Length: 200
Image 1: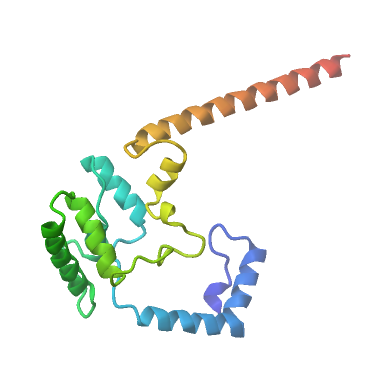
Image 2: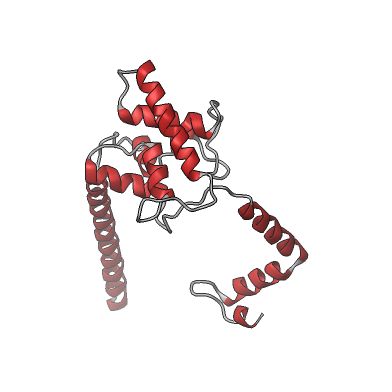
């Protein structure tokens, strides 16, 4: 318990004590064991580090001007720099099955784009032909419209499908600047009023 003696950056001492007590409680230990078992039973592992899937999709769209398919995202996040998958996992078999599904869908739906075909093949392979009611692996409360991360939120806010993050960030910066100016003006007004009342 020596390494838990010092609170980690950004956590108050009071919160840290609660966390350490929880970790060493029976409930905390039991849930930790459940988590270890769940991780041990996983058959596919992402190798993309802390960069979220949504950010990787958005970066790809900014760079290439088109949306990244779910299959392409899966391949990118689950393969290493040398484009190989981890040994003793099902990832390579899964990707091979999805690619075979893309080829079979091409013959059935030749008018669909490559991205649409890859998305359909990915979802069909991932969920065994059934698309779940809510997104899987995203936590509670996530709706289908939220799955595509940044772009889903932007669409809900009326920015359209093609709007780039840089343009949106410029608008946000302008709004923040306007709010800061209003706050400064309000602060100056209060300061002047306080000085005037002191003089009287």
